[in-house]
Image (cartoon, rainbow, N blue to C red; front, top):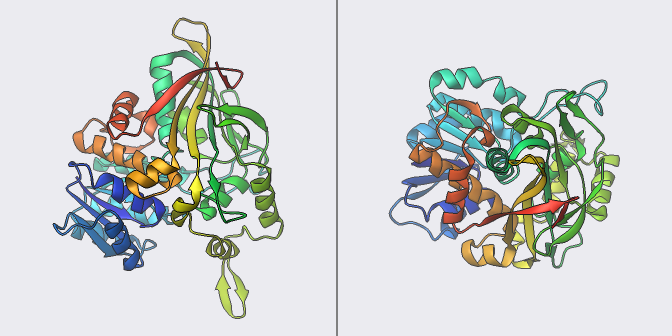
Length: 410
């Protein structure tokens, strides 16, 4: 399998470090608008005198540039490791080059113009799903939302639906951590640009009788107890792809996504919104056009550089409530925990980006073997879960599930 990775930030670099250890990856070309960053990603993975790892330069905003590089690299699949602003040119560039496509976040949404906290406008991924017939007719797969959340969380939901439940009342993706970053009062462990987008947009909820609808940011706070000693964390609604993806392929009554953000993090996000510093629109500053959100991102530490300052664990998982195979009430949490010390020791990358990057590495390997084979625009829950989870174990990245009651482990 020959892979073109577009974007050599934290997740893109971590993907290279993880995937280069697997024989199925014949060549990995990692590209960035700044070739020195791509070269750094290759070097951090140990370098490669054989030419199996290749650094390249590309403008991710150019569909034509993506197509040209994919063709010159003879890529079988493009992994989009950029933030979702760049999805359209990378998505269509892969199509033009005749490549399969994988991303970890779907096309951005646009809130409803008149009633944003009740009705959906343009939903996450709508533009990609509109292209499903075109990709299907070409015999290509666009696997969307294949990181950890979305991604592993969707696979976990598929696994629960197939093997643990006869009827699902509710699926709730729940994300929490006990990570601490020393030396910083405020240092997000993932892209602040993306975090602002998903946390301040109207969260989407799915209910069978209502379909998709929205609510206010940080709504429906609940206490969820994360396993293995991470403990009880307050989680709140944010916008996320799983709520859009899961009901398309899983028979479920209700779907939500909630982050364990903490009061301080929420307060900072609300302040950014109040000052309009969350805006993506450019403003004039002494004759220079800049986006306030890009300024915020530039002022904060790069999450990829925080690994040696971080301690603790991150937990991603899917909580499912319904009736088990025997018809009795059941509640489980299917989860994946990464300890920062372990991910730094093994891959040289901090826990959050390593946890995200391992998932598309597993998915692309399944695509290479033909175990995950489909055409069109599909989410992870459209594909069989067990092969993914077995291969994830083979990567040494262990997943677990536990019986719960009232959102607490039994």
